[in-house]
Length: 415
Image 1 (cartoon, rainbow, N blue to C red):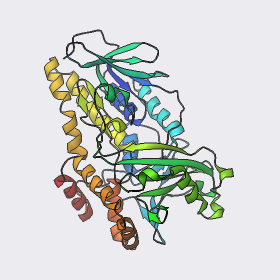
Image 2 (spheres, helix red, strand yellow):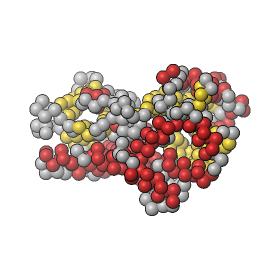
Image 3 (tube, rainbow, N blue to C red):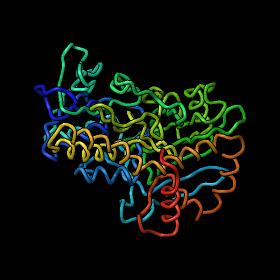
């Protein structure tokens, strides 16, 4: 364990995205002194579909975020398009989750969640770029962070919430696992009549050189006169490395009905892309005083590419473990408690993420995606099961589909 030193905070959280702000919120709620460091300044843009499932909505409600304020657009469910068919599927009626989703652009979504953390006692510093860990000479534990302007900040525990390319995790020797799926998302915005819709629209057929790709396209109305239009693709197909994703998005948009106005002239933002680290692609989630949350630990759902819900959930779980650890009477007890965090995450998501890995490997095989689209979409009952499985939306004691999904997640090996 590190030697005693004066700390600038009980916990330093690096990155004020949904994962970092949720972690900081719950830590502050428990009475800890939390320093949240963000390299950019709000408001700031981030590549995302901007769609929030009921799982993410639950987290916002738990933290007291006012989702009835202007700018939050509610939706009833998913519209699934493929194989010449189109279905509107309402979000399932569950005890654990609300029955609606939301749309909010990342231009101010992250700022809202961070401001909520500040309102609850978190100290936020913007424009602070963390460059690496400060290590205890004797134990090798992280005891703080260094910043681009040459400063050091010290704490008892450090949380890495700095995204897919986390410098902190790399600085502590944690590298990505190559046996985990990766995705890529590209998106832009159009002024369009499609800006207002009660459903998040998902297109299951993405073609490149007459080959059906594993992934989907989306059209999410933002409600402000624009629609977020994008593609999410997985690295489980042979074509993955050879695709120009931005060109694929342009081609896809050109094939849309002209009355939707998805044209270059109506584009209000450049096409941007981002990597999607899935299924716990960086492990362990705790090492020598460093806790990983959100994208830093690869907590994106491989079934659907959803990251915001799991960012906030892993933040809450991490905070619970850290609070318990810092109440320990000895450094050894604190360390033992912190070391339980990876297993807590695996118990929560490991089996489900393993199912997701098997799913993405399967749909990467030629013909499987096409077969599933042709034969699955015509069956509404099967599609209702699919929306629960892909969205990880079940009750613990629900109907037959809930029990099947929960049982599969339980028996699958942890991720």
